[in-house]
Amino acid sequence: MTLTLDIPDVLTASLGKDVPRVVLEGFAIQAYRSGTLSSAEIRQLLGHESRWDTEAFLSAHNVWPDPAAEEVEGELERLISLRAS
Image (cartoon, rainbow, N blue to C red; front, side):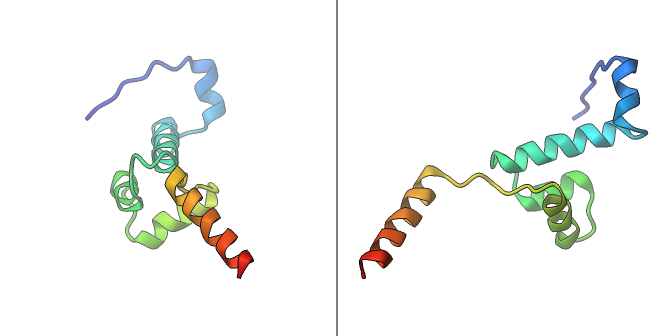
């Protein structure tokens, strides 16, 4: 898919040389955070050669997927159970 954005020139100057890459990486970060795309899909989207490149990219941007509410509740129940033991 091709996406066209109109960004004022005054703003593109502050984004650096490769504005399309900046936008693509920003999209990738948000899509991973929200759980829309997996790390394998991010790897394909950004053209990384290995999963380690993708892990390094995500780590460099402090990006971790948001846990589902059920995951958080399960962890809380396990912690409460461990504490009661």
